Image (cartoon, rainbow, N blue to C red):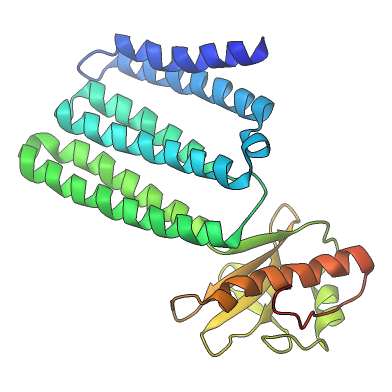
Length: 274
């Protein structure tokens, strides 16, 4: 019964768009707010209840949300073009922009597969290039009438790039509670494929445990985020193409820290297939 209600809320979030006027105004903004509200309530309630990632498997559930996000962006961009950037089409495109970001933001749950993440990053970058090209096409084809619509499509392109950056090379170590300086002391004498660790800063992360870089320019660093969760991230300083060994290395470091969580002992596996 709950899922039926959630499905009806989702359908209603789109059905209400029938009443959108051609030009922007108070009614447009009201319908915009109601549509987004209905979508958020219906979508998140249904996603929590059904848990498609659990039922379909990680890759299928993950891919479904990525595809839905791309479809939302593409439909919004196409509607802007065919309706010549009217107030109605801009409202619909904005709604689909928000929903596409939600689809991407909720993809994959808490399970991360490094190879899937890497492939998704490339797909999103390519999709962003397509959107940017389409924005230029709108301006050329519709001239001044298409400038506002093209601007929205460029926002979509930027959102795809940002999501691609967020998707890159990150793994969570479950259950890590040890303060990071104390954690560093546990591992500072342990030799790994990237050598001994060192303590420093990476980007906005002021306290990190760092390994590497290796000869290919890749390094691994671990840090606590604001919520207190410990993450490992793979950095490619030279922006070089990853090899099979490079793509496996972050998973091996995760296994090392996971082993510490479960046993309290710092140990590095020499098995490259680990």
